[in-house]
Amino acid sequence: MSMFGSSQFGTPRMKPLSSKRSHVVSVLDIGSTKVVCMIARLTPRQESQILPGRTHHIEIIGIGHQRSRGVKSGVIADLDAAESVVRLAVDAAERMAGLTVDSLIVNVSAGRLASDVYTATIDLGGQEVESSDLRKVLIAASHQSQRQDRAILHSLPTGFSLDGERGIRDPLAMYGDELGVDMHFVTAERVTLKNLELCINRAHLSVEGMVATPYASGLAALVDDEVELGCAAIDMGGGTTTISVFCEGKLVHTDAIGLGGHHVTTDLARGLSTRIEDAERMKVVHGSALANGGDERDVISVPPIGEDDRDQPTQVPRSLVTRIVNARIEETLELIRDRIQRSGFSPIVGKRVVLTGGASQLTGLPETARRILARNVRIGRPMGVSGLPAAAKGPAFSTAVGLIIYPQVADMETHASQGGLIASFGNGNGRLARMGQWLKESF
Image (cartoon, rainbow, N blue to C red; front, top):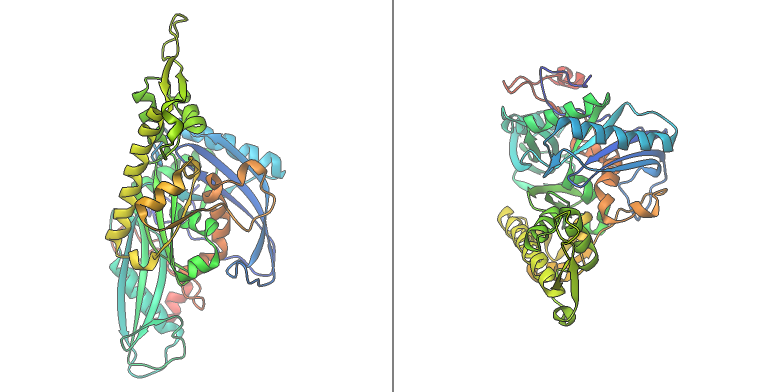
């Protein structure tokens, strides 16, 4: 059964990792194209300069992936189909790892991910900031974010202020009259999360934590300098494209649009009247987001839709395929550009954009993205993980690897000295459900 019962659908709380011992972490990336289960052994490691936030060394000991069924644009559309794919992926990973899984960290791409910053201040009366003050101000910010129809996935203090001076990373033991916090909340629709959890429960598994897809793929694909200076990670999946913005080591913004690589495939299938699987193959082999001088001369044969033996494949110039692909890719990138602009985080992103996700592998995509986003673009692959088979080292596996990295940063979602902020609110009636012990202590 679920960790958080049926009465209140908050999101499950991740238990922070112990820095002293090894852990086995299991994750599930439920996408519109594929479902991936990874099992990893996390062993404590020395601080390193390259990936400073990583407290543990990650070794993948089991992996299973299946072509997705029953998932459309990240939403569970058919419970039975999705459940059977989840079982197959988890079984394969379990067999490879030689152990059984009972709970998983799962990604969320759908549910109209929203990103909001709430600011709260409390009066200190000229005293020094104690951990109870931090709790109070974090709770005050959390109260503002409660909505009946939405559940909180992530709550990250992005910065504190003392007497109006902003940008303070850790105010503990400083003096002041007024303590403020900016809290970044990532929320999703409860119904979507409930169906996601239901699907996993039906496969006799429980959900250990839920992570917004953009957060996970950013954790896997961005290097430390990018996370520190400000950068956008754009995860181009099959059914959705998600955006995350990081700055000063923290996730500051997320967004998602319902367009992805699968839309390119269906455009091709319609435009060339061929089957979806043939269109997918043509996209991978011949598709390009960039027009090329030789395209008019190159001819591609398109398999017919019908089963009739008399139907001959039609011949089309490669430039037609490129035009169809390019139209959809440009539309997607323009939407992303506008979303970044509208979010107000454009100056923070600066010139740094990392493209990841399966659809980012399309030929000519980085060049087209550079032109439309007017920024530097690189393709990001999952980093800092050992034991990945060669087939899983590409950008298509960033989200799954990010889910494994996540437990190491889960405690950033609260102030370190504070045993955990509330992750699940009551069933929308403003009662804080399952309050931690510390809450009782501090009031």
